[in-house]
Length: 330
Image 1 (tube, rainbow, N blue to C red):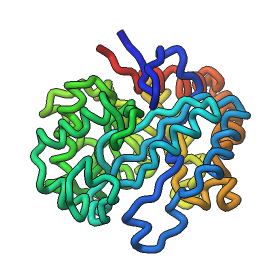
Image 2 (image 1 turned 60 degrees about the vertical axis):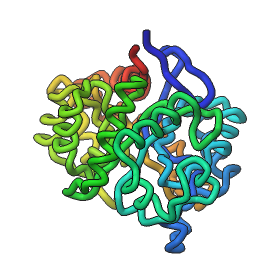
Image 3 (image 1 turned 45 degrees about the vertical axis):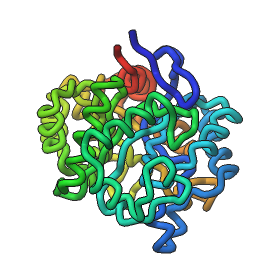
């Protein structure tokens, strides 16, 4: 039996539809708020909703909101956007990367996670099993004490390093997966440490077909991508539109290289749109419509010219693969 868990309902895999696999919709990360980094605060739900509606207007049907507890989630606001737009939204339990944990814990979370001053203090104080129980509750009962449940579990690691506390959260998330069968997502900083993450997950007996690895396009190395793909994990190319990191030609070439090698069933595409300046209705950015309205036609054109069926690949990357990746398989 397989199903997808959206914030307020379990649906069949066939119901998911055209999906962005890694976005952020409403979030106020304490780490960035404390530093006055307003661009990284998606703090106006009405503006976020307008971008979600643009995505829907072009045929979008579902979004995975990859915002974990330490990145300033606003679960009720995201659920309201889901209700008002009709876009299915998958929420995320678990953790991000360690440098964010210096931020102050939101006061409203203290009844849930305890009277800790920072996320670092909380994670350091708790055992792996206690953190596991917390993640399980967010999948089975609700995120941050709401009735809205997580549809995936997440951990993250830093640039070319995995700290002891990051390993602790990785193991907690792995054990929560065994209990819930929720799919696993990992943050890789600049696309590094994916192989090392995989080795740690193997030590927790994880079936890697449940895993998606984020930011693979930040490390544009075809050999590296093939080594990851051989494990059965999904590779998320979720930096679309971020030309400061690489041109779209590089991302498309990386994706088509994996397709040539037989890994088209393991590719996910998204934008990780987590700044006001990326959003159209916050600050005139390309917005959530960009991938579906502009990037997809370009990809189809380039894929067709290389001898592939571009439209068939789009169906794989945005419909079939997300339905497989984000399914609970019990």
